[in-house]
Structure formats: structure tokens, C-alpha cells
Length: 265
Image: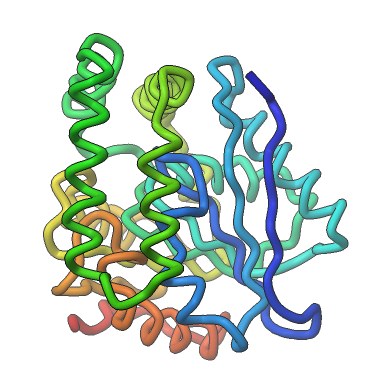
């Protein structure tokens, strides 16, 4: 099992930089549709986590910092999806990378339903691998039906299905354990850079209403929330058009954005 974080950089160095931190699945495969939609408009940086069961969240953040430094990337916006939203807070606390703004895509600060996280951890650890593989396969089938027009997205979904293994299962269990044990609320209360929250309306993984309420009340950097009505938890993949539209609005406004609730698509 390799403890090496993988990085890919798409686009020109002079373009605005958008850095994607993946969710629990841990790779760049499920963001393919979004990446294609923003091509030519931003320098898009994406990661695939190692299947580690030993890293802390600080270790994840440090690995991200190191890889960005290797690529000569010293600043940019962070697009933190689900589990990636737990990596972004220690990344901000470190200060070595100059984060211009944070977009939480199906993300959160302290998970609003810890019982659900612990249940998911138990199921992921104890369910037969064949069952979990069937769930992943089912998701891939549904996604193929929804996005059958794009060969590159289809290839990514096939690779996502093929990547599922015992080592990835154990890595997912570990990431769920990190989520359950983590409480970055003090870091979020100190965040003054722009923070935005993006979600799909049908998200049983991270209930969005308590997340958005907490950010409005407690995070001084909070600027806006946005709900994509056609999307689920994978808002960047299933709600790509709406997600791209609002993210480019946020990137254009940047620090000058005044607090507001945002619109609903």
C-alpha cells in the first residue's frame, strides 16, 4: 500500500487556480464531468489520496501542501468535497499555502450527524466486500444512464468501479473514523477568508441545513450558500451545470462578496 498522494494539474499557470480535495472515495474520477466543464477557464488541480489507514488529517493537509509546493503552486481557491472539507481546515491553519477562498461542496465543519458517520464506519468495516462492490456498481450504472453522452466520464466511472478493493474499503473506514473524531469548529470560527457552501438538495450523507445554519452564525468568513436542485451528495458530478455557474460567480466576487444567503437553482 502506497502512502503517496497523487496530483494532476490541468490548465495554464496564469489562470485562476482551483484545487479539488476529493471526498470519501478519495480520487479524481468522480469529478471528471466538472473538470471538463471548467476546462479552459481555470487551472484545475486534483488529487487522489493514498489508501492509507495511518494518516491523520494533519498528514493529509501536509501532503497536499507539499505536492502544491512541488508544482510551484503557492495560492489558489480550494474546492473541498465532503471528506475533503475536513482536510481543508488544517490546511488553512498551517498557513504555508495561501488560500484565497474555500468552497465546501457537500462539505461541513463538524459533521451534523455523528451517529450516521459511526454507523457508516461500522457498515463499511463489517459488510461483505461483495455488498459494498454492488453498491458502487449500482451507483456507476445509474451515473452511466445519466451521463451516457460523455465517453471520458464513462471511462472514469468504469475506472472508479474497477478501483474498489479491500485496501480502498479499509481506507474509507479510516476516513470515516477521522470524520467522527474531528471537531474543526474552532478553526472555522477563526476563518476570515471567503467561505462558501454548495450542496445538492438530496444529500442524505451530509444534511445541508444544519451546516449552512452553523456557517451563517459562527464562521466570520462565510459569504453565501447555494443549493443545486438537480444534484445529490456528489454535487460537482450530478449537478455540474449549476455548480459551475455559481462557483464562477463566487470566484469572480472573491473577497469583495458581502454576506448573503445566496440563491437556489
